Image (cartoon, rainbow, N blue to C red; front, side, top):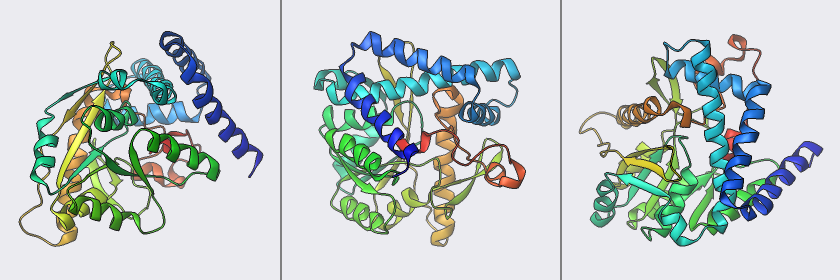
Length: 314
């Protein structure tokens, strides 16, 4: 393990070990302070965030983009402060921490017995949403997590999410898809963060006027198993309660090849994600490259692919 990896693991360990013990108002102030310091430093993650927001809000000038990136960093650190503290939250605090519109799409889908796939972008706090599902609704679910370096950091994230009632599978290894399909065929719930492709074999979609690549997994799982595919968007307001919406089901097209159906369904997910991101851009924690233009290093040599650490929360 390198010195940088040991430092990263130690910092996350300190977060879970220390921040969860802080009173909530103190944690809120700490998160905002850290966010503002990071924003003022204008590092690669902040610059990437502004670049991404420029696609979402194309008429925004430099001042507006700076305002958005500052709000975005505050939202991002709110995510971390909440996540570090979630293991110490009571069941009542978790249950009251999220208010969801159109929840019937999920409950009706579970009642049908064919399984449900929830697909989310990196909006607000998807870990809190997951804890709310297991705690408030009493529905266990399966998800996947990106394998991180050092391995001890990955183990921390798995233990953290399993402690919130989630079954966590590694993103790599080739067995995740089969396990997810089995869970769905048994009438279970699968939750996937699905606005950034990690495999380089995803589906190209139109996203805020340009081409991006998103994972094919949610659409393929729905086709293979007959599960209901539901986009979900989340956002913060000025209250301690996060808000969310379950969007109408993405239907499997009645005709076409598997690839064609997957393309149509993934585009429908992208469109649903875009509505939530456009309404609350500051809550979209995309500190990494997403659009194909940005993924070509020759076109953007100044920014490292590792800009930001957002990927560690997938």
